[in-house]
Image (cartoon, rainbow, N blue to C red; front, side):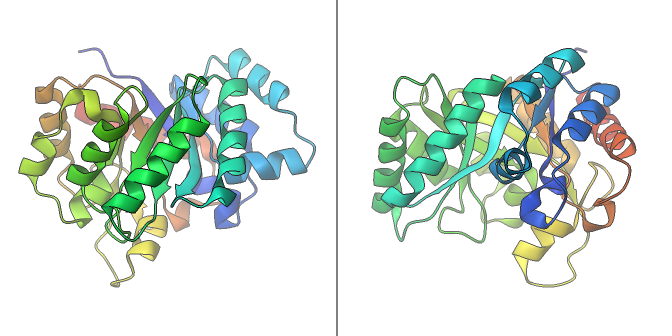
Length: 268
């Protein structure tokens, strides 16, 4: 069976987490592991540019490696504040330079009406850019459910926004498998695969940023998640986001290889 397009998420090496943000190293590791796509985040891109990196050079590095750009991660925390818009436009510029079709965003806001208005604002600012917002819902934020995320996408149009469905957030959040099965294909931006080690605390931020693991090496029902999506007919991008503190600073080639092999095992 043909594998869907896998994208190596680079957030485990992000400057947001105090890492070096070695974007060329991540690109090369992705290529060696067989990933057709790589997903950088705005924090690492900013740090790389502050250290003299040029976006066009990074784009050339990706082309030479045969690796495309799946998305720009952490492009904005949308809550309706005007102050977030310049950063969103910078992320859009990065997407243009690297050829990414998605800007991955998160959402704040006290209620659904506020979140709707914030998403409208973001879509209006990006009008004509040819980019789609991938909305990540998380169990420890106001936007915690796939149902509301799908409703938000439909509110602005699924040509402009869609749900980014991460197995970790699905499994640790309020949604049921029935909720996930009810998501229409057109409302999915892309999906994200990983696994979770048994929780050591109730701090979900720590757990999600430092205690994920390779698909199949944790306690999440990865097989059910993948089977549900495949039965639904999903064949879009699969981002692999393993956020694991013990792997930070270790060999990127081995990390990327394990990400690809463990993910491919569930999609064959």
